[in-house]
Amino acid sequence: DGGITQSPKYLFRKEGQNVTLSCEQNLNHDAMYWYRQDPGQGLRLIYYSQIVNDFQKGDIAEGYSVSREKKESFPLTVTSAQKNPTAFYLCASSTGQGPSPLHFGNGTRLTVT
Amino acid sequence: AQSVAQPEDQVNVAEGNPLTVKCTYSVSGNPYLFWYVQYPNRGLQFLLKYITGDNLVKGSYGFEAEFNKSQTSFHLKKPSALVSDSALYFCAVRVAGGTSYGKLTFGQGTILTVHP
Image (cartoon, rainbow over all chains, first blue to last red; front, side, top):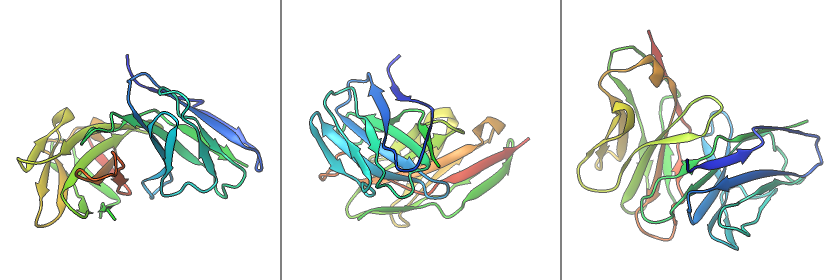
């Protein structure tokens, strides 16, 4: 089955450590996205990528970094500069064309203490 | 700029009754509108979308949504609610065409609870 795989499902880190969240898709989609979800705030866009080796900042990119070396993969690094990293992180992909809907992974819940 | 408002944090209905989850939007130009559903600790699932044309859009699991341009609304509806419909629902918008390349703006979500 085609889909998006995020790993791990739960991640625990100490404050001051960088951590990388994995996102892999086998839908052959050009566009990939990272969203952050906090209770009562909906989803906020962190970074998105339209094509390999290209990505753009979303609304809350500070303290995060990404890479897009392969079409299938779009890892997100949460750096120590992110002031409130504890959240639920969702990766998504789409064809990027017209009104194509987003397809989401099942998320990674990151807890930083 | 584009924005979405879901005025109700929670909606409670009895099983078998009709349900409505409200959404209003703001966008410069014509909108693409979407509804997604999220179950606990899972990703979002696409329900339906409005692109153009018929104002009543039908989607998955018996859901439908009514687009109203004058009221800038896109309310989600279902004629007869099921307990299994209980979940978190998100409305999302992006401007049609343009350079946003699929970049959506989401509302804050509405928790739907259907009581047996």
